[in-house]
Image (cartoon, rainbow, N blue to C red):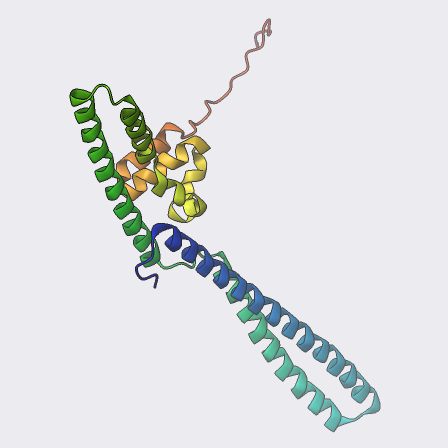
Amino acid sequence: MFGKMGLTELVEAFQKKNSERRNKIKDRIAGLEAEAAQITAKIEATTRQLVDCELAGNDAGQAKCQKQIRELQLELDRVQGLAQAYRAELQKAGYDKKDLEAIRTAAQRERETRFRKFEELRAERENVRQQIKQLESKLEQLDREIDAAKTKKEARALMAIATFIDPRIEKLPSYEHEQFLDYWIAGQDEAMEQALARYARPEEPERRITYLNQPEMT
């Protein structure tokens, strides 16, 4: 679906696609609820007509009203059932896992590019230190570039869709989110589980109350 987009473009397209889906479902539910309200009003009006026919002894009118009520009730059941199905769909994730895999692949590409750049800059820095100690300004510039290369930009780009990737990330403190996403990009499932385990809440031991000077039971 996403073609050859960059990482940021992929994330934005993913968000847009899921937002459009949710809005479409909500609009459909609203339309079905309005339709159900109209059918309910028709049933109530036809029921009043049925009562009038019964009081007037109009057998033909009664049969007609009863038929209309049955048909309207069937239609109401259909519309309400469809609305319920859409509500259930709204609770589902509703996204294509292939889209997330495309995002992961793009993030991995950027990560690899960043690693290569980091290694190149580090090697150049070492050469500058060994050969030309006088070029302090050049060395400072490379230090800044290396710091920039260390920044996990690809992990930060995933923050907006972190709960789609793994809802358990909410159990971690916010300062751990970037590292957790970096594990995900690298496919390091074991590291992700270890991060979650560090912040798992232990079960509280059973509390026992001891009363001082409690008389013995005889």
